[in-house]
Structure formats: C-alpha cells, structure tokens
Image (tube, rainbow, N blue to C red; front, top):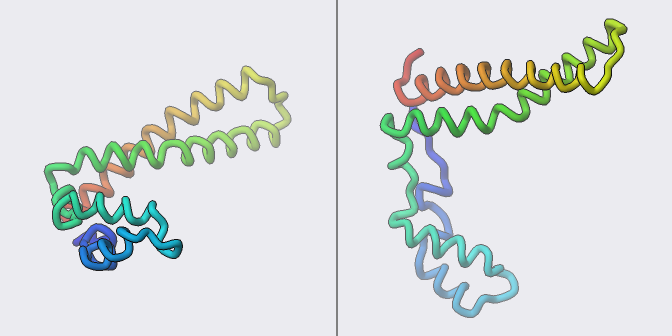
Length: 129
C-alpha cells in the first residue's frame, strides 16, 4: 500500500521553480508571501518528497505520532461518556469524581490509541495484519 500525498510528491505550482520565482519576486497581492515561503522551503528540501520518511525504518515514529494525535480526542470522548453514565446512574458528580474519571479515561485512551496506531502502521508498512 503506497501512501501518496500530492503536496509532498512535488506535483503542483510549488514544484515549478519558474512559477514560484516569477510570482514570489514581485510578491503580488494575489500570491501571498506565506505561500512563497512555503514553496521556497519545499524547494530547499530537495525534490519536495516526503516518501523517504514513509518507510519501515520510521514505523515507530509514525506510531508515536499517531498515538499522540489520537490520544486527546479519544480521551475526551471516553471521559464525556463516563461522566454522562455517572450522571445517568444518579451519583453526584463532584470535582473529585470528574478528576478520577478523567485519569481513568486517560489510561484507557493511551492504551487504545497505542494499540490502534501500532496495528495501523504495521498494516500500512507491511501490507498485512
């Protein structure tokens, strides 16, 4: 399975030095300076490709990044469901209960995010479960 992102494959206006040079030198109003700096940075990277980082050598880096990216929304989702469940059961929800539920949600979210990220990147880089 190949992961291909158009931005990082060097396809588009940012990969054509002539277009970037002609629009960025004059810095016209329709071509903001942010895009000029972005295009220059992509050209300094070489061919504008990040495919060198999508290899098995960086599998654990991608696992860690995906784990961190998934942790916060999953923790919030689990915490919200547990607070709603506690409210539905009729127990009084005070600050200590909320903090305890938040810690439990954090542990559960960390485990779920790590396991999912590990399996996902393994399938992505090795092509089989």
